[in-house]
Image 1 (tube, rainbow, N blue to C red):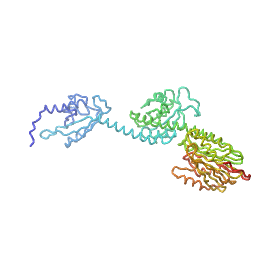
Image 2: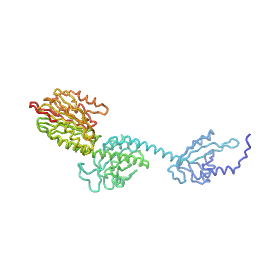
Image 3: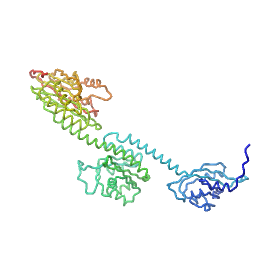
Image 4: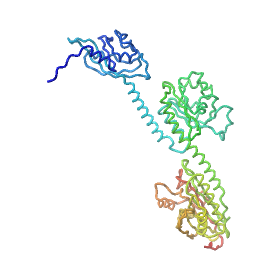
Amino acid sequence: MQPDVPPLGNAVWQVLLDGTRAGVALLDRELRFLYVNPALAEINGVDADAHLGRHLAEVVPGVDFDEQILRSVLADGVPREVSSSGQTRADSAHARRYWNGCCHRVTDDAGGVLGVGLVLLEVSEDRETQRELERARERLLVLDAAAVRIGSTLELEQTCQELVDLLVEVLADTAAVEVLSTGRRDGHRPPPHGTVRLRRAAMSARPALRAVVAGFGEPGEYVDYQPGSAIPRCLETGRPIRMNLLPDEELSRSAPNPERVAAYRAAGIHSALIVPLAARGEQIGTVTMIRAGDSPGFDDEDVAVAGALAERAAISLDNARRYTREHGIAVELQRALLAAPGTPNPRVDVASRYLPAGANDLVGGDWFDTLALPGGLTLLAMGDVMGHGIGAAVEMSHYRSMLRVGASEGDAPDRVLRRIDRLLSAGGAERPATCLLAIADPLRGAAWFASAGHLPPAVVSPDGRVQLLDVPPGPPLGADLRGSYETVYAPWPPGHTLLLYTDGLVERRSEDIDASLARLAGLKLPHADGPLDALLGQVVSRLAPDAAEDDVAVLAARAAPGHGPRREPAR
């Protein structure tokens, strides 16, 4: 049996309503205020008495509230949840305020409808927190996409294109990356004093704007920016520049030159965001994002996302730029070194071919050489220094120089390899190398081979058949490994071609080396007795028709028939 509950007087209810932080109101059947508590008066920024007899829209015209919900409650008596948003007459730190609550029908003791009771709680803080979380999640998704899509290669232009393509998907109607010009090799005179020259590396735009954007220029062009324009200011300050709904006068100052303004307006361009690209304390360029037509201006969140993307992309761009610089130096160095091989014996025809790996790979240490020896002999050498880049190219030169000194006396190939290996071990070689040596005697129709961990040589007969020679591989040079080298004799009949090569010609990452060598041995080369250059062209096109996974170096030598015998090299 429940205890008797004493009736609560109006004073108690008044204390309860006045003390709650929820906004409470009673509206009559015409939805005019009959009562508001102090909390709702504070929320609305209007005295409680000033509410009475007035409608919601009169008291808080800046609040979005669906009065139809209240009318439905009056009609059927079913309580309902309500939500609203906007700004009242009270000061607030929130750009937009939000409220949630409920409403119910109020009746008298006889069941007559008096009006609607309304209870509201402000949830602006919760909504802001939720929106921040949503924005953070969206930002992380964009950055995750950037980590996967930007910097997939070490090519500067490709990396720039990946960046602008992503920006057009998530932030802009059109985007462009421009990198600082070095002032050299651009085919132009130096820019006028005070202007800043950049090279447009990549552009992207939504389909509706592509034709218009193409009229502003193409990737690869150089653009001179007038003093004080937006991009020079961005580079000078190192901070983003946001320009929303600029008037013509200000847009004229921010554009590369004033003549661009009319074209921008014709395209519907109204807002821009420019973000600097810098990595490791060095400026790279800028990324410019444009919005046009019905797209809104850029807000603070756009600036934050664009800055995060630019910061991440700048590292990839700097890596690509450094790689491009090193790759170019390494290629030039290696080509310069390989462009001047030694001179073979006049009775030996020699041809060579060197193909650097694809653009995404650093140059390796592939090398070859020929050298005329006493007694009409010719030394043929093919080697591969381990590693890539400038260091491998420089070390390649070291090996070639050491070989020319070590082989000058005409010793057998195994003795030459042992001599070089001892010198390298004593001097502490930084990069081991494989090497295949051949001493060819065109007068005797014979050749002698020795290998330091290199792939076997081949002989191409005049009818185009390829035979691999069995040359036991000793340890690589400079590896400080115990082992021996062995000289192997092979006949070299007139019209037959000796073929020396590096692993880039035959090896494939997904293939066993025996299968790779079998492909070489299975070749049938037409017109194999023709010019050596043509023969090498056939070999390369059959085995490495596209960009190889590693550098390719090939050396071919053919003996001239009709000469007397010569002695075998000393052992």
